[in-house]
Amino acid sequence: MKTKNIIKTSVAAALLVLAACTNDHEPGYAPAKEIRVDASIGQMTRVTTDGNESAFEPGDRISVYAWLGADNDMQRLVVDNSINTLGGDGTWTAEPQMLWADNTSDHYFLGIYPERNGATDYDADPYTLDFNNQTASDLLVARTTAKPTGSAVKLEFEHVMAKLVVNLSFRNEWTTAPEVASVTATACTEATVNYLENPVEVTPATGQNLVVIPFTGTSASFAGIMIPGQSGFRTINVTLENGKVYTYTHPSGIDLQPGRYTTVNLVLGRDNIKLDDAGINVSDWENGTSIDGAEATEAYSYDSNTKTITIYSGEGLKVAADVANSGDTDINIILDNDIDLTGIDWTPIGTESRPYTGNFDGGGHTITGLKIDKSGTDYVGLIGCLGSGGKVQNVTLTNISVSGANCVGGIAGQNYGTVENCSVNGTVTGKGFTDTGGIAGSNYGTISGCSAEGTVTGSVNVGGIAGGSYLGVIIDGCHSTAAVSGISSVGGVVGNLGNNSFLMACYSTGNVTATITYGYAHVGGVVGINGQGTVTACYHATGEITSLGEGRIGGIVGENYIGTVAACYWENNLSSGTGSNNGRDDTHKVEGTDVTWQTAVAAMNTALQSAGSGWHYVLNGALPTLEEK
Image (cartoon, rainbow, N blue to C red):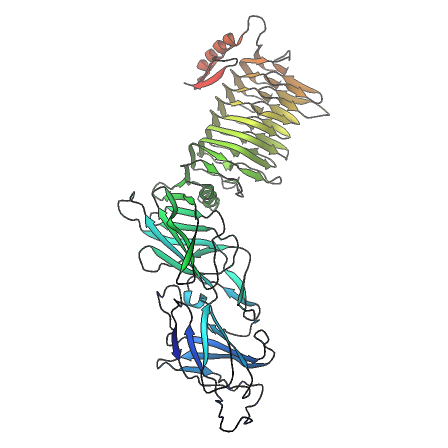
């Protein structure tokens, strides 16, 4: 049953007439010259935070329009935005005054609350939601037809906007109910209103913003005006006082209807948020019906004492990336769940000028669906540039597609820090000139215990683990099954191993291909070109090592410039472990004279112990695998 609280008032009137009042009427008839109105609110709750208030209050101002003819034809305007103000004595005062155009014609009335300021298009009136001013955002419209009589014109106002109510409850997992800092929604805040349509038509603009839903003062209940009819409204965020954020995303659009309110009942546990049994209700401000809901998980939580953000969803990880790229480059990131980045537009964390220097700990979890297509951009990967002191560890990337220009890697485009115990599965593509790797494109740091599978494609300095590895760095205990291809300096593990760099206990079992068709390529089963580095106890097996043109091709190293190769083994049809050798060459073909994988494992482990590696080989199958000591 609708509540109607009618305020009968006399309205002082203003002369805004297109036709003069006449005395052409039946004998004994004395029409009223001034227009009087009765103003009422047709449905409960005038503004969202007023509880059950259903009456206008002293000081309220409404705009009134009147014209002759059809409800959508204002060509014969009689009253043009007369502002009617309610006084403390219950009397409405109009400024300017309102008079009937004649004694007999139907007049069509339009009332708007709050008052309209200035001339606008009646069929495309711009509307902006101001969540900080609920009263100004609560659009009420009255429309009726009346003839000149001694009775007041009854204007019954109805809501044009929608209302969102979010009710929170807490599972008994909480010792005490947590304090809620804010409830927000991702929603449209701009629209146009056509008062001449019947019913009044609201057209939401495109785009969404963060909208704060005000606290009602009643338990954990929040309510706010919303624009009806918008598509894509699905997301509600709950932030606790301790910084923990829960994100509820409905599987389909949440219905927002004019003159109705939508109630979303959410239950918060310590680790999740979901709809309670009441679900979602859409009501005409008194009675409603239910629609089904679904469960959602919190996005992230933040500990300011340790500057650590804990991630529970793909949306939360996107927030962490935005925080780091906004200047908090040393923020620590911890994954608490497997993360799905499918459909999320990813911006790599850290740049060359502002590298990421925090600790990214995957906690053994998997990130699925990372997709980056930035063919004209350098430093591309989950991490764009990992700075000195930064670390990425214990994470698996699967079903990824990463594409950039130079310095492109699955984990990091460029690494000056430490990448440890990470795996990548998918495609990594460098479309620039140099440095593409399954784990890191360009490496100036440490990579340990990492693996790659899928495809790695680039131009120069292309490797299954790292494209280029330079200047005193260590890569230890890594392996690649990826198919690796590039123009030149292509290696199953590292494309280019630089001065005083160390590659230990690493192997490759994928195809390694140089795509050069003119000139010499450097292509090796483990390293494309070894400038002045040391390659110890590494091997390549099963995959083909080829060049489409001329090249220096080796089972272990394509070009061993003045580097060192010690206790390394290969298994394929190539006759040489190094395509061109100007340094120390200690390579051996397995299944050659007195060489088996068992003898190779023994020799490699001896070399690794002398080199101080933290890894050793075991032979439990056809090929050796790695174990950490």
